[in-house]
Length: 300
Image (cartoon, rainbow, N blue to C red):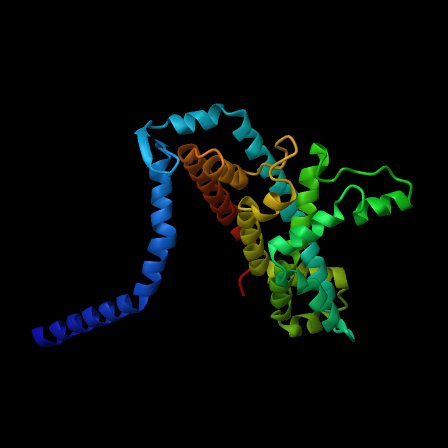
C-alpha cells in the first residue's frame, strides 16, 4: 500500500522539479526586469537619494506627503486623466468603426485593411516626428488647411489649451492600428451562421450589430479597453518628442513627470513615490474594470 503512494509522490516531485526547470528562465527574467525594479522603487520611495540614486536618508512617508501637497503633481494627475479620457474612448470607437468597415466582403478591402493596420509598423519616435511637422505653426499641413478655409491658425503644440488635445490626436492615430487588428480578428471569429439566421428572420444591419456583433465581440472589446487604459496611463514617447511636458506643464503626464523628477532633478525618492502612486491608480482602475465591465462580457 505504501509503495504506490511513495511512487506517486516521487513522480509528482519529479514533475514539479521539471516544470520549475522549464519556468526558470522566465522566473529569472521577471525577477531581474520586473520584481526587483518594483521592490526597489517601493523601497526608494521612503528615502531621500543622492545623484546616483542611492538611498541616503530615510524620511518615511514624507515623499508621499510632498506629492499630496504638490500642485505640480496634482496638475500632472489631472493632465493624465484628461489624456486618458481623450484617447481611450475615441481610439476604441474609431478602431471599431474601421474594423466593421474592413470586415465587409468587398473587392479590394484587403488594401484598406493594410492601410488601417499600418500604424502598427511605425515606431512612436518616427510617428511623433511626423506629427511634429504636421503641427508646425507655419509650415504644418493643419494650419495650411485652416488658412485655405480662412480659419485662424492654431498654435497646436504651443498653446496650453491645444497642446494636450494635439498630443491626444497623434496618440489615437498611433494606437488605432493595433486596436483595429485585434477587433478585426474578433469580428472574423464570429460564427457566420448567426448572421445568416438573422437575415432569414429579416433582421437589419443595426439590429445584427446590436444583438449579435457587439455581444460576440465583447471579450475582445474588454481586452482592448483594458490594454488601452494601461497604455494611456504609461504614455511617454510622444510627450518627450512633441512637447516635453509643456507648455505651462499642460502635457506633463505622470510618467513624464516621473522621468523629469528622476533623471533631470535627480530626486529619485519622490519619483519612486510617484511611480508607486501610478501603479496603485492603474491597479484600482483595472480592478474596477474587471468588477464592473466583465459582467457585460458574453463569453461563447
